[in-house]
Image (cartoon, rainbow, N blue to C red; front, side, top):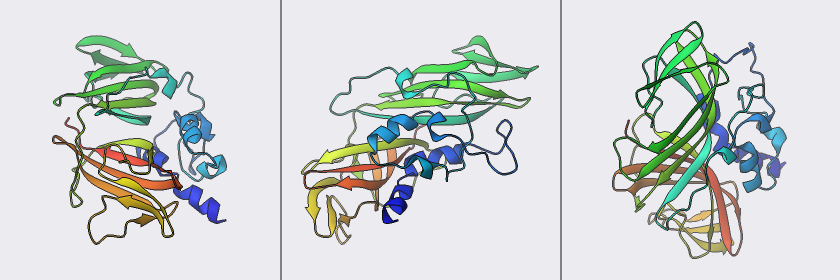
Length: 278
């Protein structure tokens, strides 16, 4: 029973999906229809990174059923990247509602009109028509900030008179990370939220933060970099929050949980919120 409660608590890396998916999904009944978890983009990869994760417990999340969408993008549809020592990549599933006149955040793709079930987009100023089942892809720099690239693979699954809904996967590449811990920092509205998993050896820092792993102690996993006067130990399933500047122009908040720890390493998973410009 304790293990099942723990696994339930580790569902947090997928929690952003339940916040994104609204009640206006196609064919949504009065009581939410729960999907096969493996129909959601990126779930297989997440499960591979978290051994022992119980698929049945994912049904407790009120996620939309996307299993009928043909060719829904997966993590493997994103190109591989070679990261420098001072760079980070965040990758995960995404779902969004795009209103007429809006740009897809972080891209130059704009929805300009919807006529008779056909969505009219501009891709870098070039016209493109999309209907349900069509792709919306982007590879390029995030606007109004240097050293940040965004890769997006979406599939349109609903077109209404006012908006389009699409789902898929995304990857954010950030160069020049220089984390500075600011525990009292507050993010503004509408941060970009990405799933995060990581493992660090004893004596090393968790990348993107100033927290490190000291090692296994009687009280739990000992974390270095915790503010003076704060309890530095965490048990499996405990939360760990880091707030600060990922680099001087990029506020970030890591909301993590301890997945596993031992004498030589600790593994964490959770959500990173990034304050990127529009």
